[in-house]
Length: 121
Image 1 (spheres, rainbow, N blue to C red):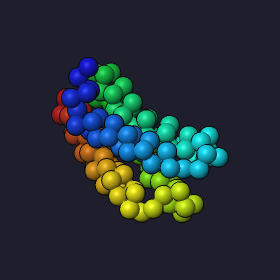
Image 2: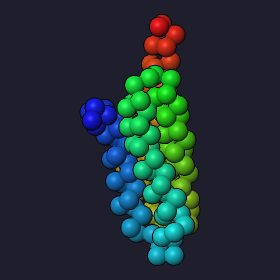
Image 3: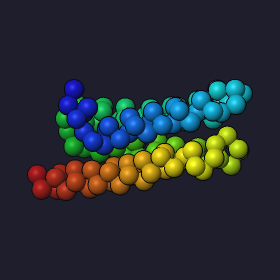
Image 4: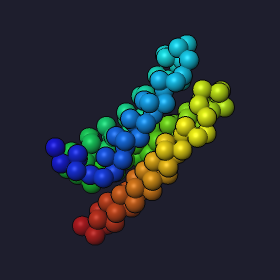
């Protein structure tokens, strides 16, 4: 699978791993609440990158990158809520925050690059 070689996909997988580690510290009553939402959103990011890149067409890939970007916004929001609810300390989310910033830039740059390729073709 070629998508596994994409740095953007690798970073998204790393983010999902970090989110899962954070969720283990949540109270048990959040297993099916915020924890579940965070799990789904974090897994959606690399999944959409993989599916989009596997489609083979720039337009479709862009659509899946938009989905990834939306899921990334969900993760950012939900991690912030976890801190506000007292489920996580800011120090515990530093890696997640850094990965979110990096992934946001990577997703946006990839979308821009693919759009410019579409214009040229």
